[in-house]
Structures are given as structure tokens and as C-alpha cells.
Length: 293
Image (cartoon, rainbow, N blue to C red; front, side, top):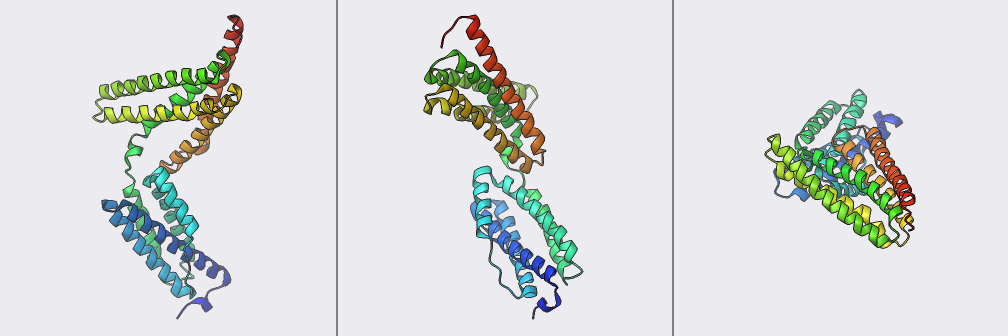
């Protein structure tokens, strides 16, 4: 027996949306648990997946409908987990659990037994928060250090080289030498600084800083390696820099609950500002030294 006849149209619509949401969450948590395999967190995710399936069954009894999961939404979350790590997706899921709890609170008077489901959603939110201990987030300060310095220093250097040097290959060579040297220097400085502060993970912190720097250098240099026009290459490099800033700050805004807009505008303004200033300095030095390129 269902409660369909007792529900008004608005409540029925909300119930169907909740049912599909629960069965979709079941699919996502099941796939995430399968990804982790023998990891202890896999059991927690599998347990949450089973609970979400039970919630979907609860709604099915009320609506009299067997809802299908949103496979596209589930697939996107799995891809995000592979690209950005489990913590990023769990944070998104945790936000979803919080929204579900609030939504269920507004329906408790109309749907018998919903208080128990809401309590489960609150418990799931706490369980998910307990899983958020991914290594990359412990070293996010080191990653930010490497990323920020590479974006600011190398975009500025490349802008200056674009005016000073006539050949894209020479610009890319100068950029690579500058970038790789700076990456080693930055990693060494991070290591010595962390060591002086008594950080037992100084080596790993330095590694994250250096790798973040070198990866960013690779992305910024690539346009000069594949394009002949050095000014077009610089434009593409600046676009790549803004894209990296956007993606990284979006990741941090979700994973660490930071203000996306403020951080994005700040990093973009600094990187593009330094690049513009370096371009102007290169232009002035070129004229002052009488260099034709």
C-alpha cells in the first residue's frame, strides 16, 4: 500500500525527486566503495550506500514508483573522484547530505516516518566528514606555494622573454631553464623552512612544492613549444594560467570550504598584473638597449 493518494502534487513531486536522489547517491557511494577496494573507508562508504538504498525503498513505498538513478550525475562524480581525489567528491556528497536533511525537515509533517530518514542523513554527513583526511589536503599549503610562485614568476618571465627574444623556441628554452631552476630552489627553500620549524614531513612538503611548480611550468611553456607566433603563445599561456587558477581555486573552495571568488580574483589579478608589468619592462629594456627582435 502507498501513500500516493494522501499526498498533494507538490509533496509527490518532492518525494519523487528525493527518491531519485537517494537511488543515485546509492550508486555513487557503491562505486566509490568499489574504487577503494580493501581500504577501511570502503566499508563506511558501502554502509552508507546500503542506507541510501533503504531510503530509496522507503520513498518507493510512498510513491508507488520505482525510480531509476541519474547515471550521468553519478558518472560525473566518479570522474571527479578520479581526477581530483576522493576528498573533493566526498565534500560535494557531504553538502548533498546536508541539503537532503534540510529538505526532509520541511516534509516531516506530510510524510510519516521521515524523521528517521533525516536522522540517517545527519549521521551520514558526520561519517563523511570523518573520512576527509586525504594526504594531498594535508600538504595543500605546499601545493599553493609551488603553484602560486610558478604562475606569478613564470608568467612574468615569459612575458619579458616574449619581448626580448624573437624565437618561440628560445623563449621556451629560457622559460624551462628558469622554471626548473626556480622549482628546485623553491623546493629546497620549503624543505629548509619546514625543517627549521621542526616539521617531520619536511621532505614530503618540499616534494609537493617542487612537483606543483614543475607541473605548472609544463602547462605554461607548452604553447611556446607548439605555436610559432610568440605573441599568440603568450596569449594562450595567460589563458592557461587563468584556467589553472580557476580549477585549483574551485577545488579548494569545495574541499576546504574557502571563498572561491575572492581567491580566484586575487590570484588572477596578481599573475596577470606581474605578466603585464614584465611585458612593459621587457619593452622598455629592449628600447633602451637598442635590441631589435
